[in-house]
Image 1 (tube, rainbow, N blue to C red):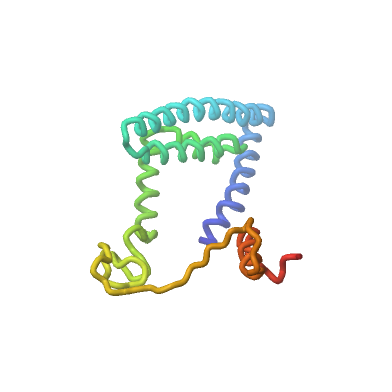
Image 2 (cartoon, rainbow, N blue to C red; image 1 turned 120 degrees about the horizontal axis):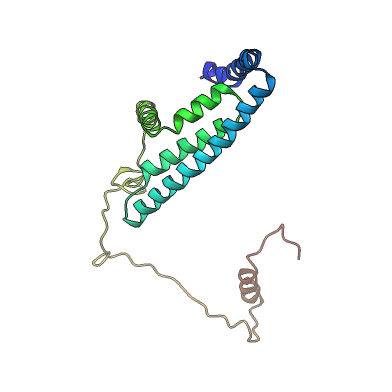
Length: 190
């Protein structure tokens, strides 16, 4: 991975500079600059056109209740093509224009998809809890249902407190006031 990043951030700019020097020496500086500007303008127009087509295809897919995966991946490739075409240089322009050719773009998407599928592990947590597949959280064997027929009894005591009434139970009123104000805390100023 380190070599790939080195090639991208050092090798590509060095290659672009070398190509600028070679092309500029053959056709002249002004012609080289004109080519760079024209490729950026033409590339932006092509990216805009293909981007709109891809967005409309994604919309049609969604309207017919299909996942627009193909349109989204092609849209990402078109976005990358646009970035490459706006970056000054002949090498990046060549790659950007290649990405705008639909058969090239689709074959590259398939290749990248296969490359990622070989290296990525997919984990589905939708049906798993802490206890493993189908067990929910806690790892028990409980699969749902009701609790009728169980003998568990929970006993308790409840006290109803009217906050507006005068009461001798100052602690109960303070507790109610604390709950209304977000609880009591030694860190909250009085």
